[in-house]
Length: 157
Image (cartoon, rainbow, N blue to C red; front, side):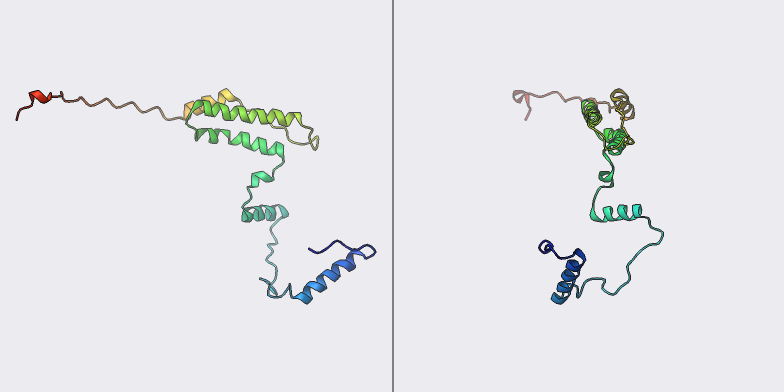
């Protein structure tokens, strides 16, 4: 990008001048895909294009959602995240952290009156589901009986 548009010069003239200077420098020669038709899928919507672009760029598509929908989606994913945890207090802490962020969202002014409002997660139901889905603890193996120890002074030769 070059300097700002000079005053007194129309925007269109200034842009044309920038393009002409770039052509003279050879900035447009040898570009990949030059002379080839654009690859456009006529069935693809703008939404599909945005999702494909985000995936190509490595952007998580959930990050593109408005805050209320992002929190709702996170609430739907809580049981799956809880299943990967190993301790009950970690499951409880995860659900309480989510609820704290939802309550903070409620206190903020919303960008629209039609903005989705996420609900709180039921901490006890989440913990109960985590307990129910956990495999039963494996019984501890019984220790093998130890042979009686022989004292060094009783060892035979």
